[in-house]
Length: 342
Image 1 (spheres, rainbow, N blue to C red):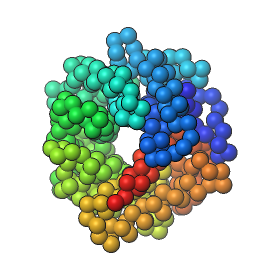
Image 2: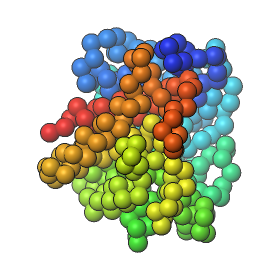
Image 3: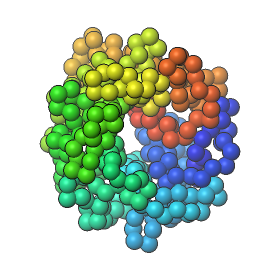
Image 4: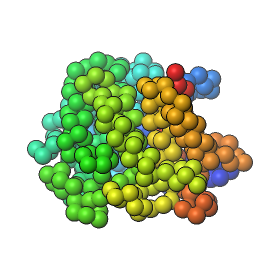
């Protein structure tokens, strides 16, 4: 199994329990770097990881487990929406890159279970057994959108397209703050934004991630108008121009809640910038691609290549710690988008 963290010298960190969602993200990552042209043993690595995932990652009822021990044994079978979203995502990409029809069939079966058992009458999905609700969160639904996107691309199955459109409508009518164009994070059971304070929290990285998805989604789910609003808010309020990075959290009024900057928002900034450049082809958007790339490179430019910093403090100092392997998916996705720059 893939490790959860890497030391700054590139070695697996101390033994830790391993989350199913991280295993899924790494399957995606190796499939994608193979399609990008990496000549290493990506097919072997991804194929073996997929076999292990299919063999150990599912309960008898067809739903996903949550956690493995360092030795790879299942130690927590609790249900979680993030885990299921990333399982669907990995299975779709494995079907695409490896030609594994069994992965696509498993994704369709899991989707159908979720459509039968997980849908909430208020819209969206049940979030599982690990996180108390309320508050309800938009973010796992974003990853469901991402998973439906690749599975529809590979299979053309209209059920995936319908799910994309359903989630896109939920975003447009509930998640998005119409006045600002931003996406907030936390909601009550009826998908009403929580009261001022927690309800006004915006993560610029999530604005940019949703913006990218609405840029690249197929007709019926694509919305460049929504993408423009999201990107506009993030660029206006979520960038530390001095450090050159996207920050963690602001409020709807643009005031800063957390001026630190994790790695993953930099990847979403780059993805959104590339997608916008491909659509608009302006010098300003080309400059945004360069700025986003330079911001991301700060996190990757370490003496040992292949590891990264995850957290930059607001004062410009790094948090020196083991690199979370979960970030590899973000890095690969951003570089894949850059690779497709037209």
